[in-house]
Image (cartoon, rainbow, N blue to C red):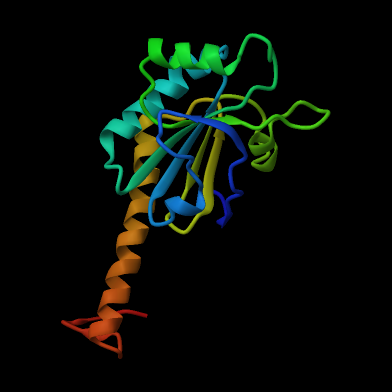
Amino acid sequence: MMAAREAPEWQVEQWLNCDEPLTLAAQRGRVVVIEAFQMLCPGCVSHGLPQAARIAETFTRTDVTVVGMHCVFEHHEAQTAAALKAFMHEYRVAFPVGIDSRGGSDSVPQTMAAYRMRGTPTLVLIDRLGRRRAQYFGQVGDLQLGAEIAALLGEGALDRTASDAAMTDPDGCGAGSCIL
């Protein structure tokens, strides 16, 4: 995992599969998994999106938010919002998907640029405090990814346990253990 840094807020033109726009700030308290993809990217279709769907099915929504980010940096005329809606229906993508805002003269979408993504598929893990903890370009194994998500979830549980213990025992020592 990478050094923890504040994750940039998303720049999204349109959201699909959600009733209202999502913000990264509103996801605080949850681990966030971003799957950056293009619908014409073979690795995204065969690996990235199915993996994101498995994550969404495995972890509860109260603990983990899975977000697709459609980052179009090529073939703009073929990857329209209408085409993406049809694609998501055909491939049964059920989690929220944001259409990354178009970039400037270099045509790299804004969220993609803010996260310094090299291409698609890219998977980003953000911890409960809104810090980017891992970012992968290409494929990452399910077991490795599951372990990393579980570790991030465990950090939140440890933080809450320490906080609860400090409230009930201001010295941090009780029931045979001490918390620093």
